[in-house]
Image (cartoon, rainbow, N blue to C red):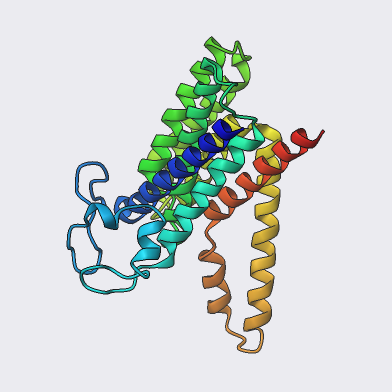
Length: 272
């Protein structure tokens, strides 16, 4: 019992460390800055951060949500992502019955792929929420880990390869559309990024969870549009309504709903 409590504490700490990395990646990747070798710094005063400034969750609390050097307020996003990541890691570990006595090579491999997938979701969603952009570098990362996961499933777990071949064909088709056709007609390929994200979700979480994630996202979008149309009805400004529709972060909504669906399914199997 004590050993499992320690294990879950370590999983929470690991989750917050991942969350700290997510916040760094969300900030730097759209700016095309290095995320591995460049030392962490304050976005406001550019001062390099010390070890005490980089402890996930606790540094934010102990510093009073302010930079130690310039006293500029730190955005709550950093704390929210770190604590959410830690809680999510513990929740998923509990729901899939990870404990100190159940470790084997398959559980380690599945947990590693789950962590890689969560990296994809968090960073993609964070960038989309901040910039309404499905970042291509993160999309490529999602495709790469999907291919590795397919190889693992088909070689180690002896999964049916034909279903995954279809997903790979969809990957290729949308990448060709993004690279060749759509460049002639649109300035960005947000829709293609969303479709590639959905394929990655289907590979990692299956068709049922992905389909429900899409349905919930469509409901969110409809509700968001209707609420804003009601708010802007008195203004009678069509331009505002169109701007609202264009600013919906679909990738972010898909991620939130995908995680919710994963948790709901795992809870269902946990109590059954």
